[in-house]
Image (cartoon, each protein chain N blue to C red):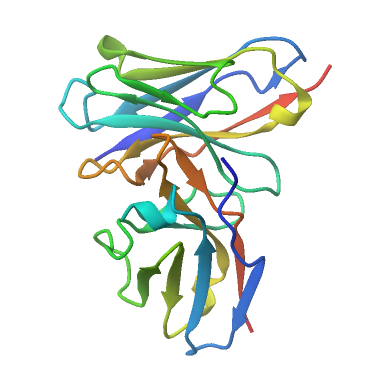
Length: 121
Length: 110
């Protein structure tokens, strides 16, 4: 059974760096074709894809946010970590991690419940 | 990368068939067979309903179907039920090796 769970600070101040952790089970990021992404959703707004990390450590980032994002994995802990620098109130959102469908990597098959991050001074 | 365009809302009566459109460009929807659809209830995480344009994950009702023509993909819900009332988002892989989501559609069952 695949599960993912996000964790991180509920409140960050503007200009601070956000670090989010995705703890997962039911699969390993050492297994070929396994990939995990981060996706966010501001309150009342649409989903926005942020980043993806693959089993072979390939990494992909949103074009508009790539200068602020870093995605990494800790195989021993079954974790994927996302850092976002220079946080701004517009970054207030629910942040989800999701495992990609392993055939074509085209869709997000399993999702965590999300963690709400508010950016405010 | 601009969000894919979806109608803000679609409604129908129980038993009816509705279709939600998702319009992109040749760099995303039109260029790949990698469109997916997600159902999201308030306060809940999205759920994958359709992937690779037409495929249904195990456990998803066959009342949900997907298609694509040119730069526009569509999600069709047949035999509309009260439990289908939710927000729906499309997504596509892009030529930049990224992903883009749609603007979202609220489905209301009258």
